[in-house]
Every structure is written in C-alpha cells, then in structure tokens.
Image: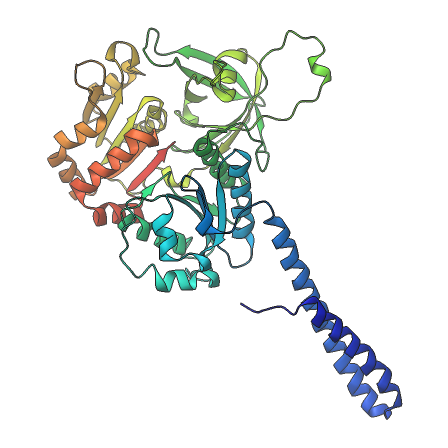
Length: 493
C-alpha cells in the first residue's frame, strides 16, 4: 500500500513550489517554459496527494467509535472483516459494524490484511464483506490472507460466519473470491450463520437482504433500512387462517393484487419486500405527527403470476412485550381487506428453479412451504413431474398447510414422492432430517440421476441439520459441486 506524505511534508512541497516559482522569473524565457510545465505537473501531483490524504482522514473518521483492535475484542463479540479494492466493501463493512454496535453488540472491524491465524482461532463469529476484482481475483488487501491462510488446513469448527459478496455479473467470474472464501471456511468445518448474500453492482435490494439478516442476528429488527425500497401499491384481497387450534403461532395465507392492474412478473423463488405501516391508533391527533418509515419485511412468494394474485404464507410473530411483530402484525391483523399496501418484488436468483429438466427434491418446514409451493406450481405448469416433497410441521391435524392442494398433487402425479413429518404427533420428536436419514438410499439415487435439491424454511435447527445430514449422505465435495452447478439452493431465514 502506498504511504501518503504527512501534512508537514505537504507544507514543505508547497513552500518549495512557491520558491521555485519565484526563482524562475530570473531565468531565460525558454527555461521558464520548461519550469512552467514542471510546475503544472508538480502542482497536480500535490493536489492528488492532498486529495488522497483527505480521503484517508475521512475514512479514519468513519471508523471512529468502532474498534479495530481484533486482539481486544470481546469473546462474545463479532468481527467484521473486509476485503476492498475500490473502498465500497469497506463502506458496507462500516455500515454493518455500526448497525451491530447500535444494537448493543460488541464489534470490531478490520481489513483482511490484518487478520492472522491467531485471530481466527480466537474469534467465534466473523462477518466477511468481500469484493472480487478483475476476473475473479482477490482484492489487493486480501492477498496476504489468501496466500498465508487460505492455503492451509485450520480447525475452525468453533467459528460461525457469513459472507457478503460484492461483484458485477458482467464479469464471468461473478463474486469468485467470495465463493472461494466461503468454500475454504466450510472445509475448515466453520458453520454458516446464514447463506451468502451476493450483491450485483451495488444492488440495494441485496444489501437490504443483508441488513435483514443483521437484524435477525442482533435481535434488533426495527432499525431503519439503509435504502428505502421502491414500493408499488398493491391491494390486500384475502387473508385466511391456515392452522386454527395449532400449538404454534397463527399462520395466514395472504393474497394481494396490483392496484393499477398492470402485469407484475416474478419467478418461483422470488421475494416480496413489504413496507409495513403502524397499527391503527385511537389518538385522533396521531396523524399530525410525522413518524419514521418502518423497516421492510421479507416473505417468500408462494404463487405464480398465472394464479392472478401474489400469495404469501405468514406466521404471526410477537415482540418481547407481547405486541405483534412489525410485518406479521401489519399483514395478518392491522391492514384491512381492500386496503392498499406497499410491496416490492425482489428477484432471488439463488433460489430460482434450475433451468434444466431434472428431478427435484424439495425440503422445508413451517412457513418455508411458501417458497416450495411456488416451485411445485412452476414444475406442474411445465409438465416436470419428478418432484419429491419432504415437509415438516407440528401436528397433522392443525399444521398441514395447503393440505388439499398437496394431496391433489400427489394424486395427479405432480409429486412422485411425498414424505411428511409432524414433530408432535408421536412421543419422540421427528423432523425432516430424520426423513433424509431414513430415505438416504433414495436421496442418493435421485442425486445420481441429476436431481436438484431446494431447501426453504428456518436456518436454525432445520436448515443446518438438513445440510449436515446431506453432507454425510452425499459428501461435502458433492454438495458443494451441486451448489456451484445451481443444483443445491436454499432460501433460509
């Protein structure tokens, strides 16, 4: 890294330029022209150096209040590590660290250049914010980390991590360094806090998705969005309770249509960003007070445009004080049927249906059925009938969401195989990962035939256990190869 001149050196350069300019008046004219040209070059160089110095000072001020001393980080704290070529990854890392610190968490921030093996050994949680330069190269400030650490085998079984990948899809090796880093961490037995988030050319929707995960990680999900989504107006048309009498929280099928009757297109796997509003207030003067916009909430879309409506599967959540959550409360209780709501569709490339005609294994639990339902609908519409659904919930009597539709799919041959596991219907708890263990031979056979695997639902518990089970059944290398080919995709939260 180039070392910038100090301010005292800047002053000396400026003084030298002034004296040089004064002395040039006593020189011949042809020499004065040469001196003038040299002065222009030196002046420009001085300007550049001062600009770079101010930029460095500005960056240093941005770090104020954030610890950069990794060695002194609290054992329960989070390290935010960045690899940046142009400075964008560093800016997002600072925002990330500030968000977590504002949520009351102990945070340290550091360039990958400063991360040593002993730091990895002591850290329990690291968030990596990394860019990719050129055609898949690591940024310059990640060179030492790549050379000294990523070529080694290090036991990181104690570490939980997540990766924010910054890149540009115009390059063939999109986010390649982030994928190499993620691959290396998993092979060192590190555990993912949540799936990699890819950001194409600064996409604000993907950055909001990262912020969404930060809220879940910190337990503070009510912080303002970094960027406000460009919502459209939609009309709430239907709200149906799907699990009356359930031991779990009420789950609703929500349906809405665009207010302007224009065509809105999406694919199976895409996300609806909802702009919640405040619950009705009996204070008549409340509308006179301008209240800040509430942060967005994300839900997997469970229908297709051909259905004529956008459907969601939303479970009511509660805050510690017992009040309804921001998003679920708005959609399931406060917004009225026929009311206009704010909604934005966000493409979720990493959970789209594979392009090729291949068998499909769909695994999920709870409201994760929403994302899987859209995929099954898409497969049925395209006549692709090698589909295997493995779904888990609490009780069959109350929590078998979309029961009639799923059983009809089985009867009609849309689902060639169906395995259900309801955890509370027997003395011993039974979950989807147990089905995978029992059906291991069939899972392997389907994968050998080129099957893709889609997982949707809760990250903690289901998704991690399913991933570990599949890793044992298929092998870590096989599962990672499937992910690289787009045959292993997850939408977990």
